[in-house]
Length: 357
Image (cartoon, rainbow, N blue to C red; front, side, top):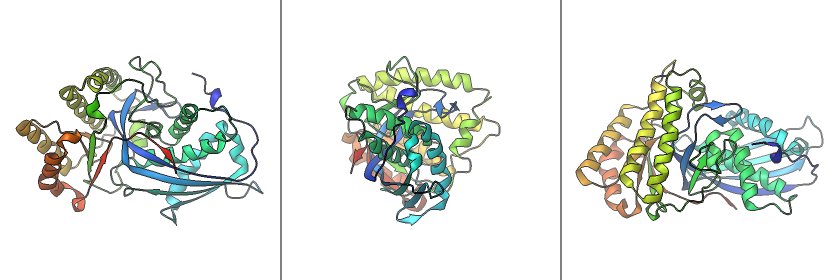
C-alpha cells in the first residue's frame, strides 16, 4: 500500500493539549524480525490488555526559534533522560508524515499503571499513547475524519516508535502484518478484525508473573536484527503464518485445546529463535522454566485450560478463562508466586483499546 495517504503537510498554528490512555498487549502469534522501516517479517495477533496502560498528556506550543527544545519529557513527573533517544528517533521518523510538528514544541508527561520494566510491553503502550496524542492534534483539521481513520494513522505512527505499539490502539484482538487469513491486514498498521470471536475470549484473563524486573541482557531491537541471516528464519515465517490461520479457527470456535497448543508453541518458538541465532542468547531463567513445568503439570492434573506465553524476556503471562479464575489464582498464589521476584505478579484481562482522557 502507499503511505502517502498518511502525510498531512498543512501548516498549523496555535496551542493544543490532549491526553490519551493506551493499553499494552500480549502477542499470541509472535512477530520476530523486521525489514524496511519497522515492518514485520511475519504477521502477528495479540490480546489487548485492560488494566496495564500508559496515560500520556501532550501540550503542543509553537516554537519561536528552531533551536528551541523540540520536546521535553516527564515520566512519573520526573525528567528521565534515558528515554530521550527513543523519543527523538520516534519524532524523526514521524516528521515526514506530519511536518507541521517541526514548528511546535511538545511537552510530554507520561505514567504507567504498572511498574516500568515489569514484564509488560511498556514501549507498546507508551508509543501508542504518544501517537494518539499527535493524531488528535492533527484530527482537529480533518472535519470528515472518522475515528477508524484516525486510529489507523495512530497505529501507523506508533509502529514507527515500537513495532508492537501498532497493536495497542484498539481491541480486543489486533492483527499486524499482511496475511491472507485476514484480508484487510497489512504491514503498515494493525487492524481489529471484524470476526466474531467466541464468547469465552471476551473476558480472558492474563496474570503476569514477574520473574525478573531487570534490564534484558539483549534488547528486542538487537534480537530482531539477528533474524537477518538466521538459519531458521524462513521456516519460522512459514510457521507463524500457518499458526495464524489455525489460531483464527480456535478463536472463533472456542477450541481451547488448539488455542493452548498454538499459544505455547509460539512462545517456545520465539525463544528457540533467540537460542539459535548468531550470537545466541537465552532470556528465560531457571524460575521461568520452573513455572512452565508447573503449568504443564497443573493442566494435566486438573484439566483446567491454563496456558502460558512469553515475550522476549523471562517473565510469564498466564492466560485462562474468567470462569476458571478462582482455582487458577489459588494455584498461582500457592505454587508460582515463589518463583516471582519479590513475589510480584500483575492481574489483567482482555480489553477494548485506547481512550481519550
